Length: 416
Ligand code: NIG
Ligand code: FE
Image 1 (spheres, rainbow, N blue to C red):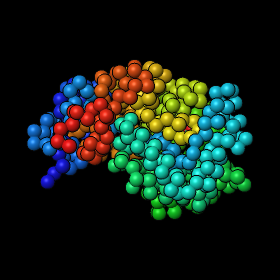
Image 2: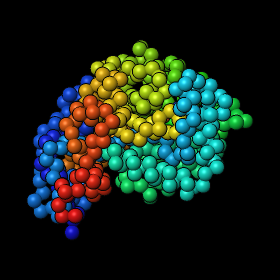
Image 3: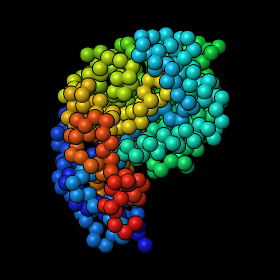
Image 4: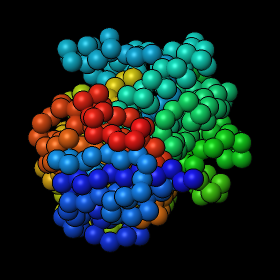
C-alpha cells in the first residue's frame, strides 16, 4: 500500500515558472509563482498538485503558504562544542584574524573535535539537525575542515557519513574542506602537498562529493585554490571555495577558471567580478549570518541578482562565525542586507541551493516527480523576513512523511 499524504488547500504554493529547471538565475526570480493549491504525495514523491481524496493522511493547509523543503548547502556540521567566549571578544572589538592567530578560531574547534568522542560529536550534530528540521531544512551539507590533519579530516568525513543515519533529513551532502586552516607544523604549501596525497583516498573511500578550501590571509591563497580545482577535476569532485570573506583577494576569477560549482561568502567581492560571476555556471553563495554576526561587509547581493547570477543563501552553521541553523532567519537577514524580495530569498534557499549540491533534479522545487520535501508556513511568504525572528514553520514533510508538526498545528492533521 502506498503511503499517501495530501497537503490540502494552501493559500499559496511557491512554484518555479516551469518544471525541470536545474536552477533559476536571480533576474528571473519574479517569475516564481505563488498560487492557491494542494500537494499530493505518495511513496516519498510529489505525485500531483491537487488534493488526493484517497490519502489516508491529510494536512489542512488553509491560511498557509507551502514552499519546498529548504536546502542548506553550506554548513560546517559535524563540529564539537561552541565558541561563545570568542563571540563576546569579537563584539567588544577584537578582530577575528587576531582571535584566530592567538589560538582561537578554527584551531579552537579543531582541538574540541579532537578531544570529543565520536558519540559526543554525533549527538550534538544530530540535535542541531533536529533544530534545522524544525526551521524547515530537509536537505543539508556537511563539511570536514576541523580535522586539521590527515587522520582528523578522514575522521570528520566518517562522522559526517555516520550522521546521515541519525538525522530526520532524507538528503545529506558531504564536502571535504581539506584546506581550512594551516595545521600546526605545516606551511600552506606543505599542507597542500598533503592534501594532494589525501584527495584520492577521500574520493575513493568517503561519500564526499565536493572539495572546498578557505582563501584568506590567515589561511590559503589563490594558487591553492587553483590547485584544489585541479584535484577536484582529476577526481570527479565538485569545487567549492570560501572566498572574499574579510578582504578582497580577487579569488573569484581564479575560482571560475578552476570550474568552481560555487563561491561562498563574497562580502568583499570586487565590483569587476560581479558580471563574470553572474554569467558563469557557478553559484554565488551568500552567508548573511556570518556577515551579520561578524560585522562583515555586505555582499553585493542586489547587484548579483540584477546581473542574473545563480544566487544562493546558506546558514554557514559553525561554532565560530555563524552559530545559526535557521534558514528563515537567514532569509530575513538577506532581504534586509541585500535588498531582496521574498521570492529572491526563497529561490536562494531552495532550487538554487539544491543545484549547488547537485540535487536539483530531486529536491528544491515543488514539481510532480520530485521528492516530497515540503514546508508549511503559517504566514504569507513576505512575512518570513518582515516578522524577523518569528518561527513560521507549522509542519515539515520530508520524503513524503510528516516529519514534524508544530504543537499548535496538530489539529490540522487528519488520519494520523
Ligand atoms: O565559513 N571562513 C572560514 N570558515 C568558516 C568559519 C569557521 C570557524 O570560524 O570555525 C566560515 O565562516
Ligand atoms: Fe563556511
